Length: 119
Image 1 (cartoon, rainbow, N blue to C red):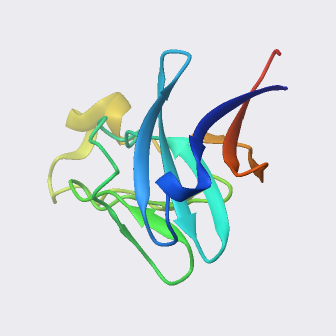
Image 2 (image 1 turned 135 degrees about the vertical axis):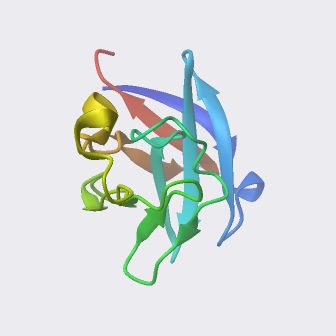
């Protein structure tokens, strides 16, 4: 695992979110209930930014565009974007459920670190 320092703890207060670029990847950091989570910053449904999405009490980030919901701890799909009636196969590939990418994090020495594979 290649650990990369992305922010100081003070730059991401409790309850806040921030998008950072880490080795060419846009990663959404979420500070919630004393933990820092890191996910891909865009919804895998159609690529909309998640930074303004709401977070449910059970820890799911909800896409503000199409209402897909993903567990911020695991990336698992909790609810997929509802298709309009009658659309059927028209949506094709974009209708297939796809999990949100998550990255390991740690808070150490006053800094927030994100882990990337292969380091």
